[in-house]
Image (cartoon, rainbow, N blue to C red):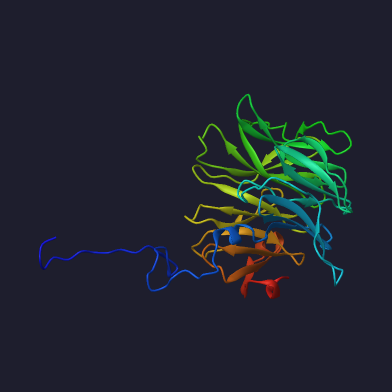
Length: 326
């Protein structure tokens, strides 16, 4: 460069944290990548239906094992239910699920569903599939990959006789060709809400559907052309389903009745919303993208009250962390 010239030097930053090495901030002498890799990291936590126990996966070293924690015993410590489960990145893994009677934990590993006694003991390989969800104490909802057309289907399997039966069979005038995922059984166990992605739209859209567990009858609750809806979550009384939709340009939360009526938008934050779930007091909570220090809740007004002119929801924000749990 000639005399008197100048040059721009750029540095990558994220949230004020420098991504480039700094000569004025040398790395701590005790820092080692190996130490971070071997630090136990719990994740994928789920609660039992009675909220008395929690199952989770802990990444530590070269394994990703399933653990169980009694939430009522004051001196309880987590108990490991599996040993030597191969390490899995969290985005490719699925959460373990405690059975309604608390006797077993279902989890996915090596392309199969496994059951392990909550009291401890050897796990049992049940069936090929993924993403297990309990439908009562004796049946599971699972994902099954079809090799012939490379689609994902939801299936119901009996724990005593593990032969998968396709869930959604009675489509009527609805398009049956596509991927079925994010299946969630209703509180009474009679229906499953799930996300359906039609193959005809080349994955440009997705919608919320429900299927009757016994008859296989399918109903379409939501869906707009070239828009994605997903992440269905049942309210505690089974009358409402919360889901995320990108219709506004962000994945805002919406509510829709079990019968497909009263579809309405719940949030208007101009941000993506994830990890939404219902509290037992009929409040919906979630995490907003980019807000690592706070989570938000809304108490949903029943559809009948909303039609009478009441507010659709009452919302608030609370700090994240153990003290913020409800």
